[in-house]
Picture 1 (cartoon, rainbow, N blue to C red):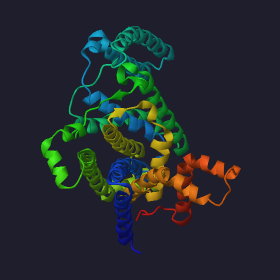
Picture 2: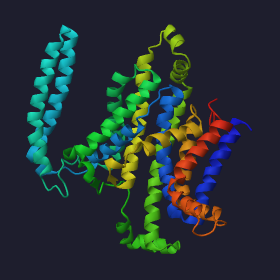
Picture 3: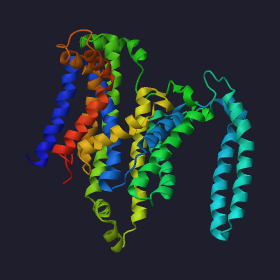
Picture 4: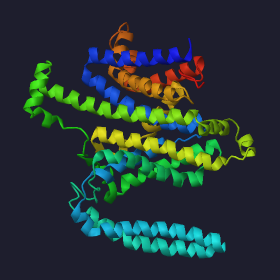
Length: 430
């Protein structure tokens, strides 16, 4: 089977699976899988850009996705005037002071090479930073802490938060890349994982910025609310004409609207990724991935190119994180776990085909579909498999109680099967 035929056949299979879900389990479930499949495909596309094309082992995907989610809060939520009056300017002034302290200490060390002077600057800057920050943060978090207790955002349209999520993740990637990209691949993985955990810890503890573990609810949406549609006589009449009950019709309309927005974003990113892959820049990145030494001998700046692609891939993950937070309607820092936002994305890239953009997209859909359906169908499958065991059997009870872990078992089995029978993925790199 040729590569093109295989590509069409596998994407047709994904289409059949989603349509089959709609016919059997309902279109509400099918659109839920489709929307998160689109977002997951964008995340996989960003990781594939870093690993499949450049060979960068980034295990900090979770942190960049979370940065995108935080961008939705900072961009689209309305500001809290009382909190800004209590300490908004002082809190951001403290952040600016901290940045100037770090930059100033680096500049002084570069010019003088005197460690004691750098240590003195860092110490004085830290003391000044805490003296400015702590009272401001306490004042902000004391403003209606049950509902607010943070500065809020800029009150801009939520669609602007998507590119802002990419920019925020790109900025974090630049800082991380300047310090970590000189490390060997395994050390780079450890560094990115650790830094992503630090980013999540900051979001959990800085209540004045994102409300921390109290979460941010009621994020603005780029599509209508279900209740507004249900109160619209024209929409209710149209739903009845199509044979849909208004509540179900409003839910499907909202999810379908998200599907259209996400599809436009995915197609645009995929086209750009394909153009980049086939350009001289893409060929150069693959050459660096395959042999850094020979690329350096040809005059290529490997470190700069690694930083470049690291920023681009992280920006795509940040964009996907902003899209996902908008879809959920709330920002929950504690929900960002390595299993979901790093391991699962890597499984998507490996199963789909590392180095192939279409393979990464395919892996995003396939793995997310299985991730959801295993939870739905797992209890039924296990009940059928254990029907022959007598009731009260210890083995039967153990298997039925272990259904919650079938997701992890399924992902592991799929990964092993793909690595055994198709080591380069379902759609290998040409």
